[in-house]
Image (cartoon, rainbow, N blue to C red; front, side, top):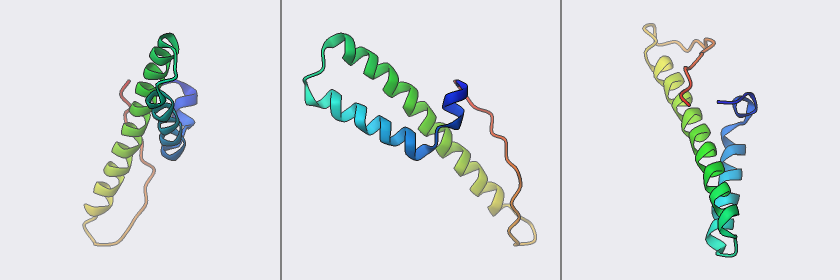
Length: 81
């Protein structure tokens, strides 16, 4: 994942993805641009999936607390490209 992708929030990536889908569904996008939008959409989808996976892992980490207390720890997730 690129450095700019690492800073992109789930909400921002999802918003951009929704915009791309709307443009593609309009049927008014030329083929060359459609392919570029598809590639961009795939990139954004991977970002969204990574952010959701990170959130899921953080939740699991909190659920596994032995003393029942909540302790927030810095969490580094491995990102897949």
